[in-house]
Image 1 (cartoon, rainbow, N blue to C red):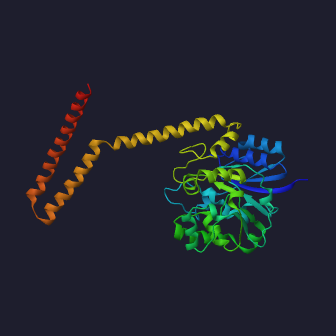
Image 2 (cartoon, helix red, strand yellow):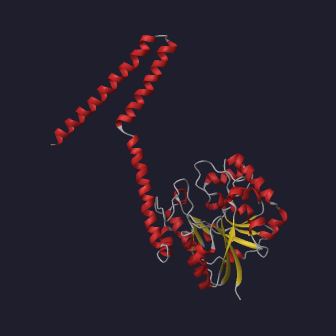
Image 3 (cartoon, helix red, strand yellow):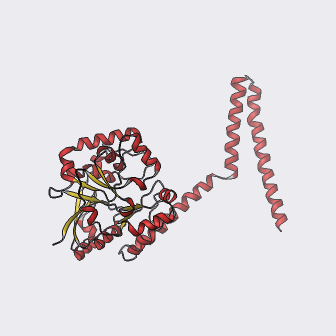
Length: 361
């Protein structure tokens, strides 16, 4: 008889194929447990998860889709215009009171941009000792994150691989309490973020486990602060690798730059039924990036930069002549002089280019 393990994951039609790696590695590395994987989604149907359910059947696990109303949640959740997170990422706010079934007493959270590299059962069954949540220690968090949590009066919480005492949280907090905590975070941080909200809400009731044996995040900032050698060593002891990202949305399937764990992710990806799509999507990412670069290049030309500079200076001089000196003749002479200067500058550049070509010949 295998012990039950409840696991929480969010994804949707847009990116669920990438979650295949997280799901397969979870099932494969936790065969001594009976996993109930609760996939929270605004649009996924059972028919979308054919391969994932085949995996569940193969390993004797279960997949349950929980519907999340993003439209209703968007009235409470707030992101900045340049943030890349989806509202669905904040579904954990509704996890305890509206989403999870009655028979879930505790649950461990992973995310779709992860690969499980170890057995999670020891962490999952850790005694809460009166705490609301078990979390990977704060020692891997960037310094600015740790300092921010001190300023807002909370503690660091790592969402990936965090375990929640569902029944106690349901008893001691309401959904309104959670949303009010989020509102306070938004006043300071400018946007919603579950790690910050839960770090404040569950302050002094978070039980930490060593980060290097629990979870290692791999992205640009973590690589800079922790260093390659430390991250590579953590991969040998951690139970999960998380590929968190910032505005560049770097992921194993969108490798803006490389981190050690990408090779682990791609080993699972190579056996995925979506492998061809992963490769083709990389081409699309690259082509889209190249198009943006070409558009920028069109706008940042010698003539455009020079024209913008000349226009700005012309306006400043005209305003100076008209307002400060009341010299209307000088005001009209400025654009004429600017036009002559612009023409001479372009002519000089052409002559320089032609001389350079002649010299190279």
